[in-house]
Image 1 (cartoon, rainbow, N blue to C red):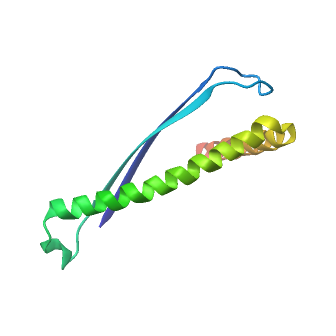
Image 2: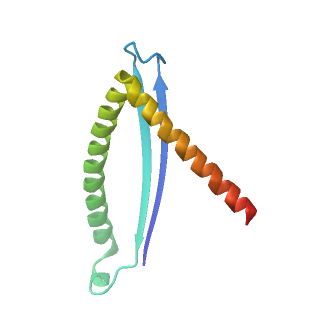
Length: 112
């Protein structure tokens, strides 16, 4: 068996709302990941603390690289968004389409 739980809290802090000026902004994300594994044989004979330390180290290393890539992508996307009105409009249209899809899903669930 394998169980995976993830919780993420994100906050943003913007000093300026006008995209044409330089501002100080920050995004903070806190992630908590819990993984439970029923260890199969022959690994079940290894002490639990060794398996946990090994698993934690592997998860920490993996998440470090994922987080770094995400942060680079987010910064690049934000730079484009903050300087390109057409791109902002395009991204806003995607958000509007997603909201419409969610509303249709809610309405279809209500009808069931």
